[in-house]
Length: 152
Picture (cartoon, rainbow, N blue to C red):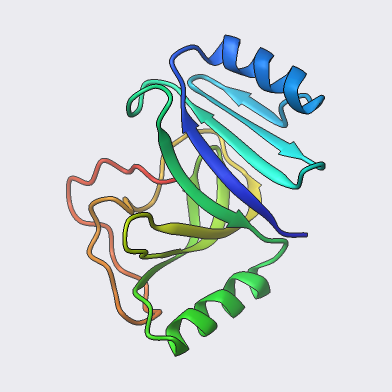
């Protein structure tokens, strides 16, 4: 199971949840303060909504949710072989979930490839993809002191 992830910044979480529930005929998979996500079967999409971050109506980030850590490892190996810059994060708490992931640096937008390992009680993240130094290898990069902890 793989599906594209689209994460959006929204002004009104309740209104957005109501709209996307109707549009995709799917209830949210998870709702927390300032956060909601949908696991949509048709089209295969992981839709994530954030309030209080970024300009409402703007793209927060893009990614691909995969079914296992092995699938994340395959992306890491492939993108490493291609010489692409990435940041690997293992067992990181992000977006109310524990995840294994890599952030592949693109020319304008970075792509998150991840799998969810478990639920987590908070939004907090173990690394900040926006401010952390990118590694040209698949080696994990430590979180800088004072990082805001933003992620997915």
